[in-house]
Length: 260
Image (cartoon, rainbow, N blue to C red; front, side):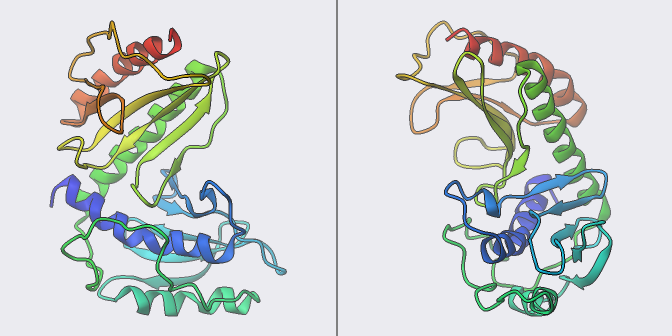
């Protein structure tokens, strides 16, 4: 199985985490109550903390075995549900036991999200386990995505939340710089813009719009200057090769955006 296929299957399974955020966390205008984080130390994708009268709980997806875990404030496991060879509704039904015990209303947990994800060929079928090599590869790339976001935040000397957005499933950040330029950066899935997963960087000035002229050449990267999305993308290829190219890509791209 390719990295792209692994990405798609984890994207689909992660919608349960997004539904937990949508159901049990007060709504935020930017939908941040539904977003996620890949915790490389724990090898899991986690939702946000859910407040209850008996303490905070959190739903996580353990990548190594595709189990969903409810954890408490100490991140100790309260309840485990395997997703393998089960339909989404069955997994949600088994997961609903814990929030119900904590006094939360679970009636809307299984409701559809307010956005559509791609119509994957396996959508609506039982979840299937993926071999460990492919899962390790996925975690390696997403760990690199986290580290790249940390590098951008460090270069800008600002704080920011590194999150996975469940709609497009990119690991990304959006921050305002001291120059009042908004910077969006992250690692995205393959989509209609790029034929492979890719790193992206875009700039959003406080006033007006950017004029994409005098663009620096960045090895293996491509500037996209027409259409809905504008910015510079770095398609991912071999892990070692992309890791080497990434620092130069970040430095050159960020340097251009900060000058404009």
